[in-house]
Amino acid sequence: MSKAPFLAAAMLAVAILTFPAHAQEAKKEAAVKPPDSPSKVVLDSWNDIGRKLIAMAEDFPEDKYDFKPTPAERSFAEQLLHAANANYFFSNPAMGKKMPAVEDPKRSDFKTKADIVAFVKKAFADGADAIKAKGDKGMSDLLVDPFPGQQVRVLDMAYGIIEHSGEHYGQLVVYYRIAGLVPPESRPKK
Image (cartoon, rainbow, N blue to C red):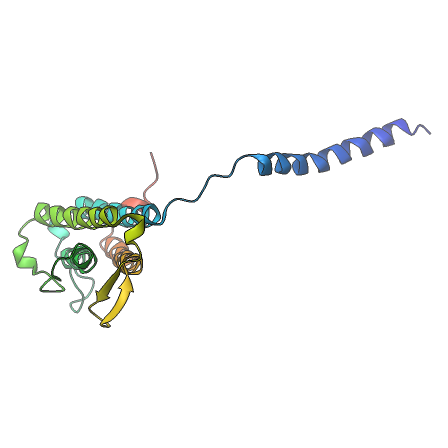
């Protein structure tokens, strides 16, 4: 019996099994990019959740803006106003301004969908401007979080508001689904 076919099969198997190891070594030798700066990471997260909430504000039908899943909950419009206004609990102190007078703006002060969309856009733009103004060095500056009355770093306050916006984004996804609609982020990409 000839050993040539067996030997050829064994050599092929060894070559196949060792090729991924060589490919990984080549990847390891490639230059690793440095991490993004702290302020860029915060800004990217801020802008991402802002983009999602702005897309919802622009997309949701105006005739459903006062929709509530239950009477005890905020309407779609009130959720957007609350989430957007919360940004000023970060951006105002970060920029040395006074805290907002109220946590929840009145729906009656925003007559149209366009008014609410403009407010949401401005609130996220103002927050992004505050992050840019603080830069990397300013991420460690101290602010007072008014709710627990505790000093926090700018970075921590920004992430707290990002997380808060994410919670409201999740609630608004449910509003979409209950209203029989598909949220923009859940639609097939074109």
